[in-house]
Structure formats: C-alpha cells, structure tokens
Image (cartoon, rainbow, N blue to C red; front, side, top):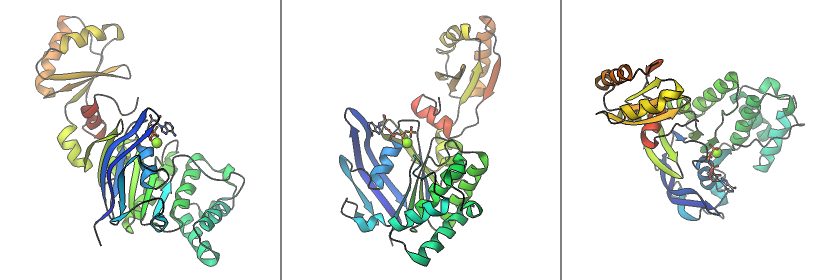
Length: 313
Ligand SMILES: Nc1ncnc2c1ncn2[C@@H]1O[C@H](COP(=O)(O)OP(=O)(O)OP(=O)(O)O)[C@@H](O)[C@H]1O
Ligand SMILES: [Mg+2]
C-alpha cells in the first residue's frame, strides 16, 4: 500500500473577498502524526474542512490512497474521522447516548455499536462517567467525548481541530495519551493547534501555516535547528523602548526587533557576539535593561523567524 495516505494539490478557498486558503500542497504519510500549526485565522480549519469533504475547494485536488476525493466519493468518507473545533454534543443526553446516536449515523448497530462505544470511552478514559449527562462534564471532558465520537467508525485517518483549546491539564494529558496510543496502533493523525509545545511533543512532522499558505514543513527538530535560533527578549521601560530600538537597529548582526507583551524580541545573527554592543548602547544612552533572556529555540521562535510575528498575541 502506498505510504502516502492523503495528498492535497494546490487547494484554494475564499469566503467572498477573504482568501482563507491560498494554494496548499500536502502529502500526509500513513502512520504519522502531522501537525498543522498556525495563528488564529491562518486557514487551518478551512483546510481541514476541505480535506474532510465538509466544504468543496474552489480549486485543487484531494486524493485518499491515490483515489480522487469528490463529494460523490462517499466510501472514502468512511475512512475519515473528524473532531471539529466546535463541540457538537447534546447536553441533556449522557455521553453513552450521544455516542450511540453518532454511531448510528455511521451505520453501526446492535452489539457492534455498543462495543465500539465502550472501546472509544476507554480510549479517552471516561467510561466511568458514561451515564452522566454531558452538561455535567467539564470543557475538557466534553472535548474527549468529541474525540471518542470521531473514532466510533474506526477511521484510517483522524483530523483533530484544536483539541486542547480551553481544556484543563488533566484532560489535556488524557488527550495527548489517547493521540499517542491511537497512533501506536497505526492511526494517521492530522493535528491542528496553535500551541507550539503540543506540536513539538506529539508530531512527527509539522507544517506552519500563515495567511492561507504553508510557509514551512519539516520535522520539529529540523525546523528548530534551521530556523529557531538567535532571539533574545529584552525588557526596557516603555517610554524608552522607541529610543532603544532606534539605537540598536543599525548594529551589525541585528536582524529585526519585534514587540511582544511589553518586551522586545531582538533577532540576532549571533547573540553572544552582538550582546556586548547592545549593553554598550544601553549604558551610553542611560537606558536601563530590566530583563534579558536568550530564548530557547523552539517552534515559536521558528514562527517568529518566518513571519516576524508572535504565534500567540
Ligand atoms: N464561514 C466563513 N465565512 C467567512 N469567512 C470565514 C469563514 N470561515 C473562516 N473565515 C475566514 O477565513 C480565514 C481563515 O479562517 P479559519 O477558521 O480557517 O482559520 P484558523 O486557522 O482555523 O483559525 P483559528 O485558529 O482561529 O481556529 C479567517 O480570516 C476567517 O475569518
Ligand atoms: Mg480553526
């Protein structure tokens, strides 16, 4: 069987004047956890909705296992599981009844259906709460039931759209563990998030998306090695920041300066070589440096490097 489970070629989608996705190519390998990382509005959900057949692309093609995915290709939909960003559970029904309901939509019946419901409840570690109404669940537990619903029909590929937003730490861990366990059993997972530490922990490969395009794609380690280095975070009193930026910008080795949370992120060719000159400028102009930190290279600094903006504002 082909190692590529999903291929997307030159996908485009606009909502009126908004170009949400502008020419995306993707090749997802069977058995990988693939991360789609990007800030709010990058086009992640729109891309996912095209890949799962919820909305048609304006342009471009999608192939599953080499077969063209069209609205008529219903059999291919059976191989796809989608856990949407928005929750879709009935609050007054129990988790058990919600899952039975979704299972019937997928065409499951009788004992097979009950066994699948038990299996997915185990996977998200919520079998002991199965008879309680959904409205008594925490946000994170609801998300876990949502994930369970996407797995009832045993898809080959699971799409998770920001599964950990607004989730308590316990549920977050349960979600990570479920994702890792499912993947060990061979499930291919496309995981959308704007938390770079999640992508770093879970994903074999990561695509960074911004303004409707994929701007980098590789293993987290290679992205970080190639592009994550060279940032320092400097604290300077607010009324002196502008002067400080003006003085350091012309220095050799200073690429650019980004403002973030009241601090300045300075991108340097080689921090250790340029730092003394920065200190010198601060002393000469009597600008106190209140904090200084060399940033650990990670996917966040990769994103800064690529776009000049912070992933989370
Ligand atoms: N149904 C819609 N109608 C009009 N515009 C839309 C619609 N859905 C998305 N958009 C716009 O398309 C762009 C991409 O949105 P999308 O939801 O795909 O981004 P996202 O990366 O999933 O963001 P988030 O991290 O906030 O979930 C945004 O500018 C958004 O406002
Ligand atoms: Mg989204």
